[in-house]
Each structure stands twice: as C-alpha cells, then as structure tokens.
Amino acid sequence: MNTDNTVFLFLDDCRIPSDCAKYMRQRNIDGSIYLKNWIIVRSYNEFVEWIEQNGLPDVISFDHDLGNDLSGMDCAKWLINYCLDNCKSLPLYAVHSANPPGAANIEGLFKSYIKLKE
Image (cartoon, rainbow, N blue to C red; front, side, top):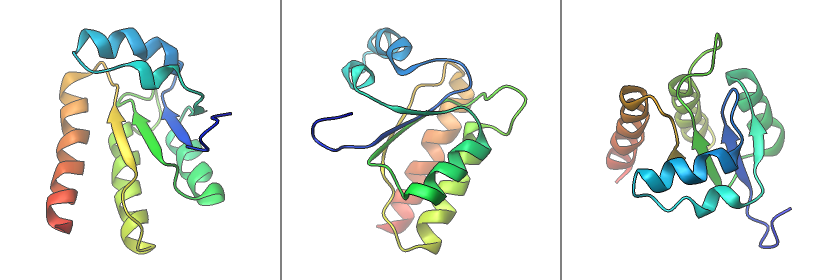
C-alpha cells in the first residue's frame, strides 16, 4: 500500500507496472512512478468494474492493446463519460502503451477533453 494514500490504477493485459519503469525512461519519461504500488486491471471489464466499485483512482496508466478485449482507448472513452456523468475531474494519467498510434490516440483524446473542459 502507498504510504501517502495515493491510489494508482494500472491497465495492462499482461505487464506489471515495474516492467514499464525502464520502458518509460527510454522514452525520456520519469518511470519511477511505476515502482510504486499499483492496483492492476487486465481488461476493459475489470477497469470499469473497479472504478464503479471504488470510485476514481488518483492516477491511471493506460496500455492500448488489451489482447482480445476492448482496447485502452475504449477504457479512456468510458472514463471521460464517467467523469462527465458524475461531475468528476479526470484523474492524472499516463500512457505506457508500446503501440505508438494507440498511445497517441489515447493522449489525443484526453488532451481534447481537457481543452474542451477549459
């Protein structure tokens, strides 16, 4: 458990957060956040279920490709609708996907949403 009570949610079908620390550093992004304690969800359904049961986490990290399930982009779209429907602010987020177009799509969606809310 995190000593500062920050809740981290990690969406990825196969990796664990510490796998992403080195990968993110290679992309010139501080990967140390991935060494914290994360709650791991492996699919769209687990993502939705966790948030519906527990509320929004403080930080979410997204993978794009989730195997045969819906994608991280589907989760991002659901999250935006959840925030709108419940008058909630978007949590802090990161995209750790190794799929460059998929990662760019998730980033673009969130940036557009943030710009619209301003």
